[in-house]
Image (cartoon, rainbow, N blue to C red; front, top):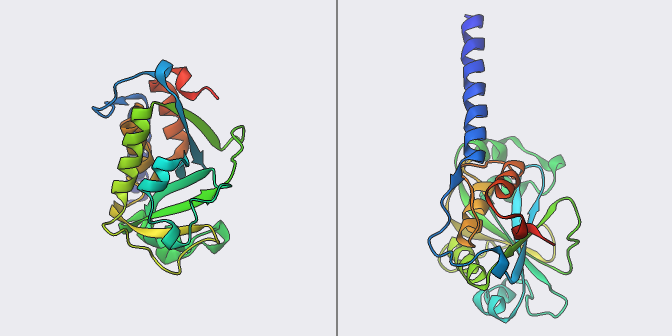
Amino acid sequence: MRSRFLNILAVGIALVVVSVIIGTITPRPIWRNRVTGPADATRQILLLSNPIHTDIAIPVDDAVRAQFGFLPAAGLPIGLPQVRYVIFGWGGRAFYTETPTWSELKAVPTFKGLTLDNSVMHVEIAGDIDRHDPSVTVVNITNTGMIALADAIRDSFADGPKLLAGLSYGKYDAFFEAKGYFNALFGCNTWTAAMLRRAGLSTGWWEPLPLLLRTSLQLHNDPASFAR
């Protein structure tokens, strides 16, 4: 019985490993609106990552302030001159809102994150971000790509948008209800990949972890897309 269980476990692990490899090295078609290449890229966004999660940082300009004009009412003064970026991340409500640090890891939010949970959008405003930090990937996109990316991110919010009052990590971030459901296999990093495809980049078919997403971006795009 034990031998059979170990064999099944080994097969399961092997299938996951093969799926991850295929999902990373097999390019997924870019969003149909891509019209220009890296040589025409005039805008830069930042991909921020830790071992399990990715965010997208968009430079603030008048168009971004207008499109996300609901943020000041949520306590995020995006119009302040010292605000350089607005950072967006999508994730599972229980795990995302209740686990600001690893020391605060709890059983129920973790279980929901591994199974199925409602989703949230986490928004943070920031000043200058060190582009040479290992957790930061600079991504070059076109003006058309920036518009498509901002539209896709805005469309990820639930209608309203609906602020989750009282939920934040600090003074300059907030959580909102989001569209879709979260689980560990198709979670925050697959959302990030989808947003980057809308911006005109190619990714693999499935990247559940930040390292896999960054690897697929390097594999399937011109190196000029990541020039600092």
